[in-house]
Length: 301
Image (cartoon, rainbow, N blue to C red; front, side, top):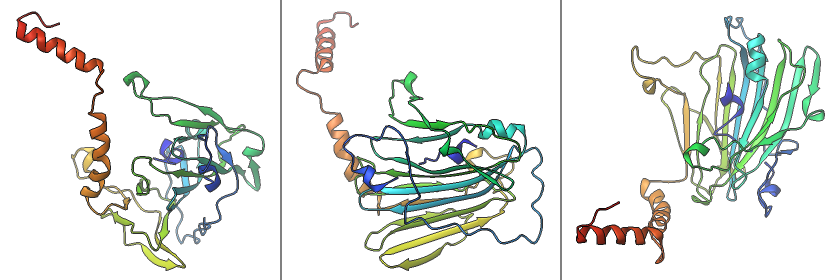
């Protein structure tokens, strides 16, 4: 369930992007004006099959992406029902990561729906920001921050509504956009949408997995749009006895690169710079020491 609230990803106010200092805490604001409402599902002709011992039921999951010239925005809205005490443990901690050096995080709503009551969690509680550095043992610092919040008073049967936006601009790729979106595994009652848009004068290529139908495509004003809406689909079946990597996925990939040469032309100078040693580099001195020892017949330590 972590993927529901931690998305590769993640969300935004355009003004926040222009700040001189990285955003070190999430913002709280209304959803961006470009976001469209996800229409409610039509009344089902047949009841949703029982979920057995499942801890939660994902009622809806909405992804809206806008590729821009300054940065990319990703809006995520989810509705999740807690079915049993295990669901309380699974959803009791909302965790939203973002990379402050290259983007922002803005939370739009976090509500608990209990019958006819709607509890605004953000009116009573605030997020705590953690710097986990999950690869610290490998001497890798990724700079990712995580906003966490444990909604108080959750009960079995509650429905959690969450919406947030992240912005992102890769400092290496610059104005080139890249994004991959995976749909969740099939669940009987899940309604999912992926809606992406970009300026008509930009070239954004996309490719879907074979398990997805063709999207709806249209141009509105100065923007192009593609949209997939899925509802109550069974999960893709893996070939019997095959490793997990052969399991089909529902995935859409977006890119502004036309070919690998375009990408390598951007990355190559970074590798060339990283491989260049300064004149007083300690590594050069160590190489010289070992070379002299090798030719002199001395032991190399």
